[in-house]
Amino acid sequence: MTKFENPTDPEIKSLLDNTKTIALVGASPKPERPSNRVMKFLLDQGYTVIPVNPGQAGSTIHGQLVVAQLSDISVSVDMVDVFRNSNDAAGVIDDAIAIGAKSVWTQFGVINPDACTKAKEHGLIAVMDRCPAIELPRLS
Image (tube, rainbow, N blue to C red; front, side, top):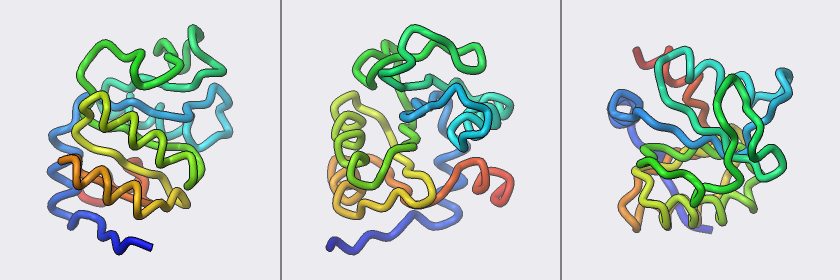
């Protein structure tokens, strides 16, 4: 297994400060799901959040149009926030690299050091097993 280290607190703060557009992969319309709550929190903080979920494509979550996959997004993406299982995260990170995202962020319990290392090797900032909805208030 690859050794992976998250960025330092100042690096994470800088990432969050410089991020404007977030693609949230695994977005759920169900209010009880963490992805739904995190999406609402990020929208409330002023981020543009694009929900990604093939099963919900064409519908809206928190007023935002859901797309099926990252390649369906027509604007520049700063961060890809991953709410998928650890194995599925690898494919999502490959897609994030392919669309030229600046960073990938995997949520609590989404642990894939190899995929996050690959993201870093392709010039992306990678944060693993953390939540921006917790890091943002903690670091501000």
